Picture (cartoon, rainbow, N blue to C red):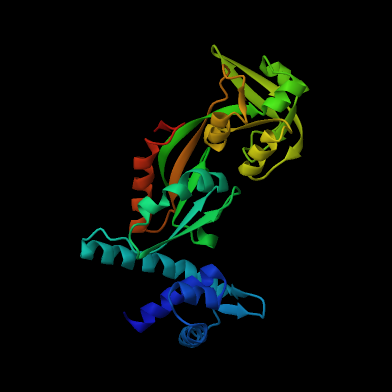
Amino acid sequence: MNDHLSALRLFVRVARRGSFSAGGRELNVPQPTVSRIIAALEREMGAALFSRTTRAVTLTEAGADFLARIEPILSALDEAEYAVRGTGELRGILRVGISSTFAIREIAPRLPLFMENPALRVELLADDQSQSFVDEGIDVGLRFGVLRDSTAVARRIAVWPRVIVASPSYVERAGLPRSPADLAKHSVVLGPSRLGPAWTFNKDGRATSVRVNGRLTATVNEVATAAAVAGLGLASMASVGCRSEIENGSLVRILPDWDMGAVELHAVLPGGRSAKPSARAFVDFLVGESAHWPGFKTA
């Protein structure tokens, strides 16, 4: 491969990993060689691309701008190589932005089916908070709920019902809510769902809202689920976030006859740049797998 192209790919990996050694390991390049190649690239560009300290390697303003411009070009080259080979072989690195719960419960157990090709590497950026496609170099993001970025290319994968759950021990201690109004007297575990303090229900075409209160707030769905299992209160989430707990009896559904709406899952490809072949293949893989996942309503 062209030495300059290799240097550009190495620059991207160092930028994304924030480390010369980590970026080099991904491409099987020793750290001293990485430093030499990056220094030569900076001389060629006439600008410092990284700020180096004993603790971290960070992009300079020029480096961040260069990264934003060079990544789409490298993705386009990958696309061209993929088309010319015509073998359907996926290669390179695929960065997936994903919630921690979905990564743990649904994606990681199924990745062996997608990663059969040894030339493909996958990075799961698991975080229940909002992720930046540009800053984190995400190739495909899995997003729950309403999409806010109108410039992105999105494909709806599936839909889950939103449910309320509690542990049997909590129900025994605090009583079983019979209507949404009863929730005002209960303790609630507030998760990352952005429902806010008022929960809305629908039944027979009529909407009912109730203000809930909780002493515990969790920014990660797995924590909210564990807290509900421990008996700290009621929790509301997409059914995928507590399916196994409902099945094994450690959580029970509350007010199952009341509709709290649904949570949609979208696969999102960043706007303004060509999607990697591996990103498109991953989305197709999810669509195929969703038909076999309990709790999914296929879009």
